[in-house]
Length: 254
Ligand code: AMP
Image 1 (cartoon, helix red, strand yellow):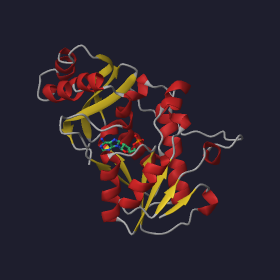
Image 2 (cartoon, rainbow, N blue to C red; image 1 turned 90 degrees about the vertical axis):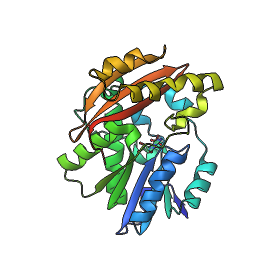
Image 3 (spheres, helix red, strand yellow; image 1 turned 90 degrees about the horizontal axis):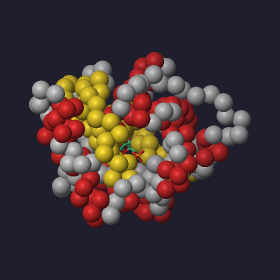
Image 4 (cartoon, rainbow, N blue to C red; image 1 turned 120 degrees about the vertical axis):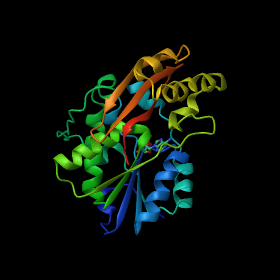
């Protein structure tokens, strides 16, 4: 497995599958890597904690990082090349052009500028790696919708693949941020998937989920229309950790 840190070292190859990540890899990322390995001749994983998609500096600084472990996992998953640039490789001092998705609601409203950062970095990754396919997790369902819209609107020649959310046995969606949860917080965090799951099929899923959040404070609980699908999405804070999750209400994200 090759690790490169500059755009100049990236070699373009047909049949490439790209898995963009911010590292602190877990079984959710591994599911994306496994799918990419099955469907492509070559797998590239990007490892980049994208400052542009974080609002608060403290959140960016607190984001878990363990590159040595991430590289071991990537190697075990059969990744051919890891692209792990420093921030100024993707955002040099003179950087001045942004992709501005119009996605509103849910994460778009709760984290102003978040999807602008996501869309901009993903378009840059598509341009420098030129993958045939790129893999994203349904855990970030709105992100999948934003990237699909970007690819349609800007005619980017890449197929977007969405992979089902990987959960722990107790139902908690795996997240890099889980490492910040104390055992007691982790137990409380289970209220999020349970509330969402219990609301599926209710006459008013938003009200039903809100009512069963068990004291967890939501940033939002919303039915978000993603075009081909509708999801019930929520973000909660457990201590200082912000967690998001969603369940499908209608249609398909795949
Ligand atoms: P991140 O490193 O958190 O930016 O995530 C990189 C990719 O992995 C994104 O496309 C996420 O949606 C996806 N991902 C994160 N957690 C999970 C999960 N529990 N199940 C499936 N995909 C996930």
